[in-house]
Length: 242
Ligand SMILES: NC(=O)c1ccc[n+]([C@@H]2O[C@H](COP(=O)([O-])OP(=O)(O)OC[C@H]3O[C@@H](n4cnc5c(N)ncnc54)[C@H](O)[C@@H]3O)[C@@H](O)[C@H]2O)c1
Image (cartoon, rainbow, N blue to C red; front, top):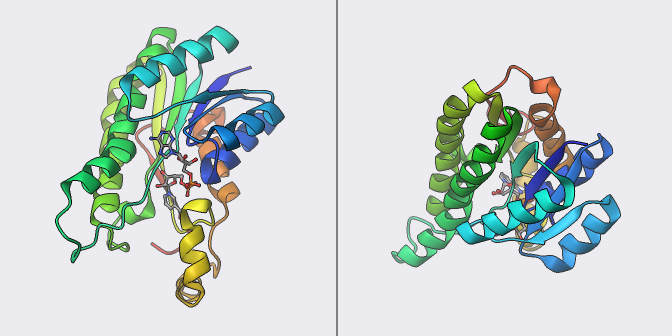
């Protein structure tokens, strides 16, 4: 069984991806800060949960060791861990908030392609999928300065890694979700139902995305379906950017 690590795998898009990849025959290592969600999910999926902080290089080392010890060499990585920041144009200048956001959304992805990319390069095969956001495509749809800039950064990281790893048989691609119904969006959905209804009405497909909509796109790139795709970006947003 091909083994794939899913960061942020305990919740939302990461959890849906962990389920779908398992259904399609992968062995999944769920890596997340949320033990209370990740442990039961991994148990259900017959996988492995590892408490993991994507922003910590030592944590990556521990994650790879735990995964390889349990299941053997890896096949891939889905980098779905992420945080939003709500750093707006009129917010007080806040380097610490930017730093926290960038450490997870951007450095977390860099550390992932370094750690897993080097491992896969030695094996001469594999697939990495990084989750950016439709907010990192023009026109800028989100007002969140820190979130949007770090998600643009993810696109850059994926492209650099894709070019460098392609000669070794390792593919690196990016999925850019639109508005998806996950715990990250729960507060907005709960507190601003009218705003959300307005956003949904403006989506050509007239609905918010579900985590499974994104998991299917990730599966395309991780699996052999995406055999000649690397450095590619797939927007999955119900037509918003069409
Ligand atoms: N939901 C959306 O509308 C949407 C849209 C575009 C992009 N995204 C991106 O999709 C990805 C998944 O988000 P989601 O909507 O499923 O949110 P979510 O909050 O449900 O899941 C994110 C997961 O990442 C984990 N995480 C956060 N910081 C971490 C860290 N330092 N180390 C390890 N894990 C950490 C959280 O514990 C959580 O389980 C994120 O990168 C997000 O930016 C989401």
